Image 1: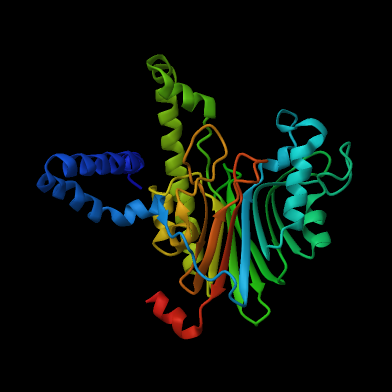
Image 2: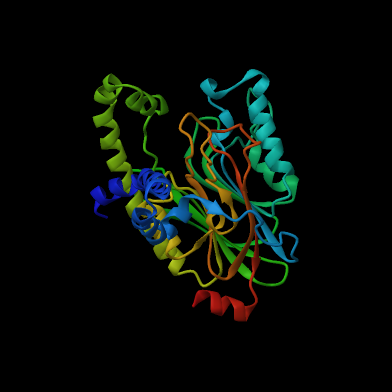
Length: 345
């Protein structure tokens, strides 16, 4: 990846907004001049639609033989002292909500589970609560186990049998990775679900806010933020290339969930969108912002589907604010064999 091009790509939303403003201005002042920004708008329309979905009605979410998929970065269920609130309210509520959710498949990033009771009782025994007690099989990919036997990593929970599973490592110097599970559907089809967490920027949110709030903040924070931004872009480019190779090798229809830590105009998103359809861009409405923090309008959590799937619905669950990411929920249906071939072509 040529990393300077990645920086330029991130400026695309601002350029598109400026072009739209010029279009409106010249329509009111001298309409022939407006033909130029109109042409630019038409030429960049596919890129605009990556960040702004315009599908108010979606598809028929009540179709039979569907698969309901929920993905979420759960921020280790706020187990760290600085994330906790009184009586572990947010932790308990988030865990209960996931356990009771009717989704067929859950893909969780920044996952945490305690295999046996600790000082907090059974609050964080999440693999059992979200898995076995909720009628789901579990597959936990562990990146770290602490002194009490608690596991940190990612997880896939499925109401369908998990017939095969695996982990995709991105190298020895990072805990970021991906995992996959082959699921046997009731009608006999096998599908492959990927769950991925790509390299973060390792940037403090307040530093970013400070950098654009004043000249002094930009001078003090700007250069360091740019360095981290570059490192994150380069690492994610290698990670997504690894992930794409595994997607291409799949003999089954693919669903992919993940915290990409990147925007719809990035190299990361571009590589995935070249092979898969993005659920939000296909049936969503609006920006689909999934980051729950001070930085607005960021869609860094996504679900993708191979052409064999029809995306029926997709929504960002902004009513579940217990992590720094909002959950993403979508419904899919496998296309008939003839339709699958046509969609792939």
